[in-house]
Image (cartoon, rainbow, N blue to C red; front, side, top):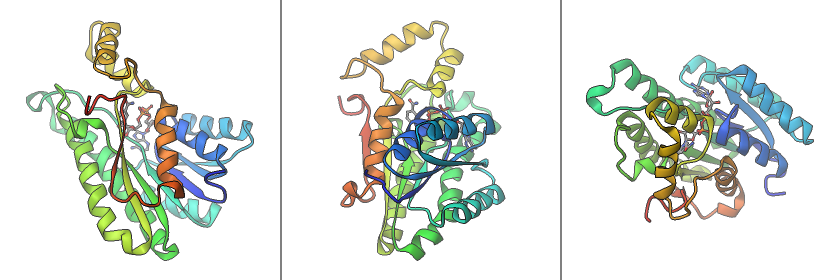
Length: 254
Ligand code: NAD
């Protein structure tokens, strides 16, 4: 098993990619701390893992809130003794060009997608520095590399995550900590379904158009991205440091 004996904290793992990663990490022997702002869905992830014989615990926290994040990490360490893998996965979507986005909507996207990464990493890093080991996976997006219409706040937040990843890697390499970024293309999750429903009169046509841009001819699944996260979490990627890992059906460079 590729994560035997490791402890992994996955933010936003009550749904989509985070949930798929939590299940896969547990199958590969990790003890998983399932975090989400949504208690119901987070608990469901834990129940799914328990039903498969895996080890997981849910700790509710909003990653934008410093006190909640500190408590999350404190409780995780109390429960499992250490954190080997931090997957900064929690994120929300944002739609609109600059002139269409209200300030509070801009701030909401930035708060979850980049402030959340900062706060969670800030709380976990002292433990990894003491351990002199750890793997941090930051959820960026291929939108950090390609321009898409009316995604100003979201693309800015995911570009910031990619830049932060490189900076973090330089700062923490000396502690034996690796920091890499995941850049998925379009993955069918509740996140994308909600975005398509709220942004297009004909979501089916929008899906067909998204698929046509993929070299793969199809959209990705949460499991596709979970496999990439597993690679970054495990020692198999020990020579990967500060890098982007694309999991995008060829949309970025195709
Ligand atoms: P999702 O909506 O299915 O899951 C996101 C989870 O994050 C939800 O359970 C939600 O409750 C949780 N969350 C939201 N705000 C939170 C907060 N403040 N604190 C804690 N948890 C919070 O979405 P997904 O598609 O699985 O996306 C996961 C990550 O992948 C996001 O960062 C997203 O930006 C990124 N991503 C997704 C796609 C895609 O196409 N689905 C592509 C590229 C990147």
